[in-house]
Length: 382
Ligand code: NDP
Ligand code: MG
Image (tube, rainbow, N blue to C red):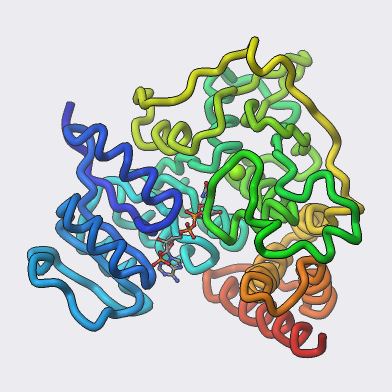
């Protein structure tokens, strides 16, 4: 099999390092020729030393590049990811930067790569219409990495032209699933980072606890699978064994199952259409005994409802929701605000920033800036 070159954008993160595990396991199939990060220079140096990419980038320039790593072409600065990606000429881009900070990389990957492997859900939440249009016009496959979307993508392989009645996104419920409203309000960073089933980066773990993550995923599914909000439902499933489901017109529901391990969906996107074996723990149904399901509680987790409403409102509403959430989550992680304020900050931004049409990426960034300013103002007023 011919080796594919892959750019790992966000190589030092949770998704990036797990993708590199797969590259490590299949050196003949993949060559990670472009590795990028924000500021974790020591981590990136270790990866460059091991994988020997042609190109690497750090958004924050380090004091020095170690002498043994000067074989590689380095890029620095805020646009270093995109410049590195373009210089690398990689066939595939794994977009695994967190937040709207990754939108630019997705946008340019659609110009220069054969396939985009998408983990960075915020790129679709904010720029979804524009990104999907560009992907369709360029004939560039967008292969989902998010586990729910990978599950749906896999179930849809059996569609054979039939219409889809409903997408069912499963949801672990996050670290605070069974907590009472008052306790949720005062949950600490430590409480929130203790995710029951997945081990992920900080921002998405907080998003899971507030359940805004599931809202972002509804918006992501809307764009990836061209489904209206009304046809996307959420079911809380604490074991995270069913990764998501598709219901067809005859009532048949197809599900994709597996132990919770992101190397499954990452590997599926990397190897697509081939399935790459890895040391996955096999599903043991007898040991599991039962799988549980419940409806999401929008009273205790209001961010989910806000995301659904933002999708229905359209235009810049999802951008506003996302921008305010990014500001609120980072304030929470710095222990500047209680957990319960996150939903209030998002709500205040959605109330105060007018929704406008999105016709260009510049419109996305303008709405994001307005949302961030509104969120900062709310935090200052607290
Ligand atoms: P992490 O925080 O673990 O990693 C983020 C990566 O992006 C790091 O390499 C980081 O570099 C880099 N990065 C952050 N900000 C910038 C920036 N401004 N410019 C350039 N690079 C930047 O995140 P995750 O891996 O958890 O998540 C990545 C994306 O994948 C998110 O959109 C998330 O929602 C999605 N996702 C993640 C899942 C998971 O299991 N983790 C599951 C499903 C989806 P540095 O280390 O230097 O800060
Ligand atoms: Mg997910």
